[in-house]
Amino acid sequence: MLVWSTQIPIIPSRTTDELLAVSKKWLVGSPHSPWQETDFGDLPTQDLATISLDGQCVSVAKFSNSQGEFCGFRHEWQDNERRNWTTDICGWRTAQRFLTSVQLFCEVSELGSDLPQPKKPYIVRQLIEELGGDLDGSFAVSDTPILLAETEIDLAARLLRGETGNLLPVIYASSTWRNEPAFDSTELAKWASGMAHVIVEPSRRFSFVLASHVDRTNPYEGAVAICWPHSRKQVRLFPYHFDSSREYAAEITDVVRQALAGSRPDSRCTWAFLRELVFAHRIETLRREGKTSIEEYVSTFDAELAATRKQLENAEQEIGRLKGELARSQQTFRSQGDGPLNLGSEQDLYSGEHRDTLIFALGIARDHVFKDGRVRHILDATLDANKPTGERERLQKAIKDAVDGCTNIDSKERRALEELGFSMTEDGKHRKLVFRGDDRYTFAAAKSGSDWRGMKNWISDTLRNLFK
Image (cartoon, rainbow, N blue to C red; front, side, top):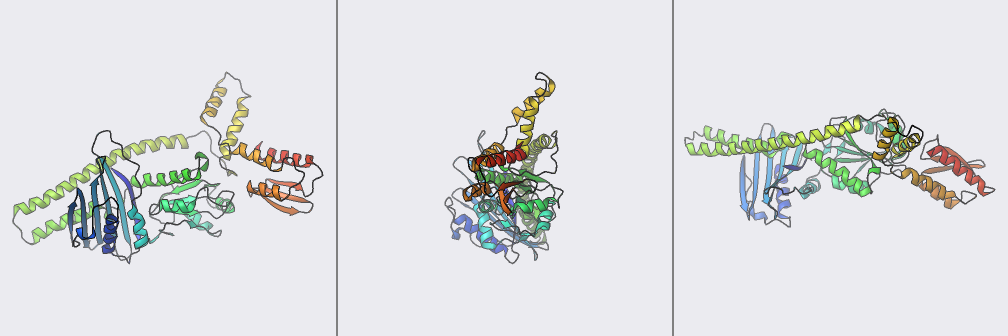
């Protein structure tokens, strides 16, 4: 079963020999590998060679024709739990591009054995570091996040519309009101390197401007859109669904991994395609040389037949898996897309604002309908199934605590309010406080308060406007 997969554009000036050299280096450098550099011998030409050592098997292939240069490196072994692992590293190089693929397969030998959570093969990092990632559409392949500039609104809009021409998926991280993503983007970029580009908004203001260019369909306030190549389809993830920023980033990475494992790679950059080229060449060579030995033909055709059968088995397994994935995705789509409400044009000013506000409003409505009627039953069921994020209540308490008991907004109170998302400017005898960049929520406070009642009134007015 295919459990991990990606295809990476490499700098075209690199060669297939260099790709195979990095593949050997990866295996020789593994702490779990018995292989040494001298075990491999010379590279084959227009052919495939297989070597066995301590129960492990390595196959190396090279071939070239009018379509370009092809190479492959396959490593097969069995772990202590009798799980069979196969790693395929393949390359297809032309004058304009050099596409490499890494695929990891795992098959269990015993009924009831579980597949482990696959990790990204270390070879992916080596390929990027030693051969260099090429430009993929509008973005360079790397292990660092791409930080958008305030002027790159058009690029962000084209990305969200699926118009940037990239091969790898894009993880688009919107900015929180703190003008930063809701997780460590540097860490996520390392986790997702070779799998996806990590694109980061520069500020919350950027998100507001972008909204008018994409009909307000952009993610915002820390949400993430995972954008698939050549498509407007996206997966959205939200920070309030996770207990920590690290858990949030890990889930984003896993969504991309699962999607890549379920996608169809370019067939010209797979071990199956390379093997077919080699076997077809062998048969043609036998025919051209006028070989009459039946045994030679039988041996070659048997190898081709075995390879075809194996490919068919893998395809049938993949079809079964994809049917299951399709059924689950359709169920998820129905549960998410056929909901009773379409959200309007308003964006969240804090994580989970729409969710918490609707739950708050439904709770009020619940107490004003006939308690044994159908409406009450629907509202009860909805409230039981949807719990608030808690951010709404936390913000209310934090705003109150920041200035409660004082008569004026001094430096201490100002820092606390700015931490909560208020920006503050001077306006004559008053201070203007704007909540999270939205001018509709501007609150005036006197520079010098005469008593505590002035701040009490400010708290009451602010909380009423933002939360009631």
